Length: 380
Length: 130
Image (cartoon, rainbow over all chains, first blue to last red; front, side, top):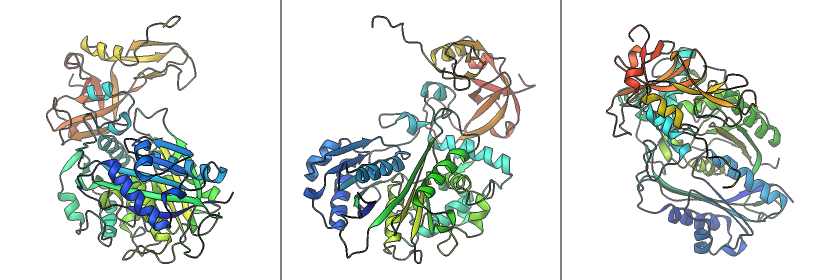
């Protein structure tokens, strides 16, 4: 059947766009199809994320899908989606799959805290019982991460501003990405001077809230059109759960499930950590990047912030991290922007921020469902 | 539905308990594992029998967060929420009365405050000040 590949990528602009999630997803879908050199008649699979209706997307884009799936608007589902897409293609359930994602969080006034019409339980507080958490004044994903950040500070004795090294590094990458929403310089002084949102987390520990869409065209390598050399292999996927205890912050910063998911993705891809040329870590909040690095074994427990300060994650470091500017500074697209960035890096199209000879890139998303995906230029 | 009992709430006894100044957690009959919300099958031992049991309300701060953004209109900022590991089992989120963030660093011994918790907000105070 062949191996799953990404042959088209499409993104919209990012920011306050005044467009619906469905419209953003559709526009990204059109661009991804154009990028792949395909028309909607070529597509027989549709995977829709954070849109109101897969049916509406299929209808508007003229797609007749024999394999359809819609997943909820949670970032932890991005790796789940790619795993499902890979299996659908490699099993022959469909041959050419369009993945569409749209997010109107900025125009829609999403707050990620306090409840409201646009909230989901998982998006609100990471607990399963909002009545219990809200009674104690506990709300928002950021506060959940603040609890873990303060615990991490306590266990490892890091400085109060240590997570600033993550935020400032990723902002430097964004400064070299014309598509990024936040491109101006961010110094450690700026970081420290910013207001607390949920102490110990400050403003720049938080991701953006913006509008945007991402789409991918996926098929198998035996069907991918030859010549362009632009097919990117979805080499390996991994997933692990920490749901049974997700009413409370993880007491090991998800180290166990991160390692499990990461090792599964790397193992199935047939590569090791030393083969990874760049890392895309789900940076909803700066501590999550550190949890990911440490959990996967790229550095030891408690070493992540020093690792950033020492420049390892820089574009000319030994493992560039979130080269687009990530969720913290490019755009909050719940992992899909990081996947698009990985594809562009592997195609050599990341102008201004290209990782030289990038051949294998790992995506890693620590959360109560941990996912990891290894993408590469070569077949697994 | 025929043959089905009324659905048991996994959180209502906890919320109702607060109003009478009690801190109730669901306790597993098999191993004593405590949680809110209640489980149907114990995450620790797999037993299926639970009862809502009062906690003595003593514990230590596992972590803390100080809210500066006002997500909840009913609570003025700044305010501090702690996650308390209770001495008699289980963990619970609570607000901190007085002092706040700097008085409840991780490891601080705290005590459930029944009077303040009757407002419906589980509230803790540093031990020795209750």
